[in-house]
Amino acid sequence: MARSLTENKTRTAVFILLVFGLCSFFYLLGVWQRSGFGRGDSIAAVVNEQTKCVRLPNLNFETHHSASDLSNDTFSSEVETFEPCDAQYTDYTPCEEQKRAMTFPRDHMIYRERHCPPEKEKLYCLIPAPKGYVAPFPWPKSRDYVSYANVPHKSLTVEKAIQNWVHYEGNVFRFPGGGTQFPQGADKYIDQLASVIPITEGKVRTALDTGCGVASLGAYLLKKNVLTMSFAPKDNHESQVQFALERGVPAYIGVLGSMKLSFPSRAFDMAHCSRCLIPWSGSNGMYMMEVDRVLRPGGYWVLSGPPIGWKIYYKGWKRTKDDLRSEQSKIEQFAELLCWKKISEKDGIAIWRKRLNDKSCPRKQDNSKVSKCESASDNDVWYKKMEACITPLPEVKSVSEVAGGQLEPFPQRLNAVPPRIAHGFVPGFSAQTYEEDNKLWQKHVNAYKKTNDLLDTGRYRNIMDMNAGLGSFAAVLESPKLWVMNVVPTIADTSTLGVIYERGLIGMYHDWCEGFSTYPRTYDLIHANGVFSLYQNKCKFEDILLEMDRMLRPEGAVIIRDKVDDLVKVEKIAKAMRWNTILADHEGGPRVPEKILFAVKQYWVADSKSR
Image 1: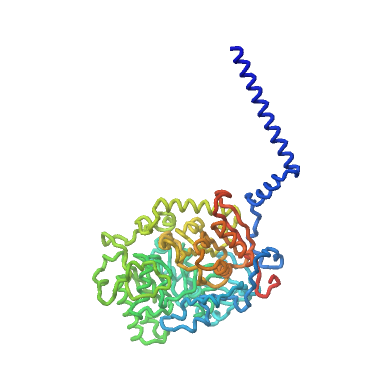
Image 2: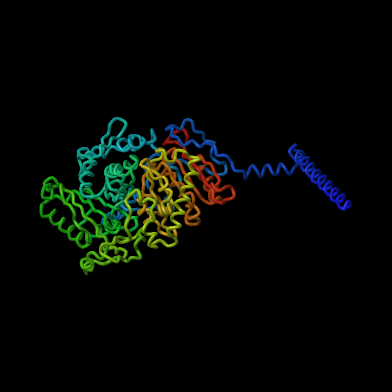
């Protein structure tokens, strides 16, 4: 036993000496490497420098309205910089360009629809801002005032002078909230509508304003928490949609012509036309049928102006009683065929309510004079011709059931499971994956705010999400201070835009290989999640980035989330477009292959010294 104790003590002593010796060796080796004589450490230092999680510098997200203090040393010597376009292109909208439009037929307003340039005619230069451009006034002041330098066009102040659309006062335009059909102001007009339609109860959240003018209706509906998608054709009245977006109101360039609207079926709680000059009684009721397609079951259609109220107003409209009576009669007939119930007609305003389901009046819709649209084309609307057919609603078990499912009032519907998901209408998504998506985007947005703490402060009013998915990015940001245009790419695997509308948000379908239907400088912040990996080999990254630059305001911000290989290419092009950039790790850490590119577009204007 004594010998065994002696052997154990000997082993312990040897082990301690061995550990001490190894520690001393590695300590001395580390000192040697740190001294600069060790080649291994210098290699490690290079690797660490290239791969370490860099602390983000403070990108400047504020506005300055001046290019004098901006340097031009941000461009990579390896990428050829993009030159500014000529000053004549300050308002360039590639797919609604006036000269090209005039070569197309005028019937059904075809010439006012999208006609994008061929590859050889695309501009590979940067659209300049006009001289004197400044950041828009913050909301809600921007609703009423727009800087003349930003939209230097006065024709509307002359054309619509007596209709109270817009007034030119010094160096600003003032928007008193009037309109052709509501000279006393949008507020009083909305009060008239609210006496019939439950606008203030959260049951009406999304609205469509056809032929919107400068979108004063949408601007004032925001006070009622109603989000309105407004549209009007380009150059019908100069820059009307540009004014709307400059005011901070959702809008896009568009027309009810020969193509379907870029929205899913059953999207809007209310549709509106105030003297919008759309021939509702013509084309076999095709335009009313398109409104029926995008209107939610139980939704409202408002028509004010000719021919409504013709008995009182026909002299001012300079049309005969017979002509106006005949036009209204045809509208009434089509409304009856669509099973719309007329619930009010007063003071030149008529309001109909759409059927809740197809069981409510099967006889009228079985009429041989009208066909039913194929249900397979329900959301397949991109460049699809409009047809004189009635879009069928999802089947129901009783006449009192809301086709497609009952929606919660807003704001409860923002995060409630949308009926399209609850009923299994969206392949690949369930209530569980929907909840997970909401939590994921809450995490993503929280991470964004660590870099850009102005994200939801009102600094950015007009925001675009280029690949919106279920709309969770917009849902996290939801606030009266901002609105988000949720875009679902036409090449996406699954159409999720209907879900976005059921959440009380708005958006459109679009193909990012083409120009978006908006004027330059109409968005303050653009978010792009997986856009470049989605469009890999579909079109050039330059095309997408130049379009983003065109839509983005000077000193606007960009957040791009994508695979690191794609972002490295994107960053090189972005620097060549006068964007200040920083590539950051995923919030999950440096080993996640997805990264985030933050960017700020520099301020510069046509013929500025920063060229």
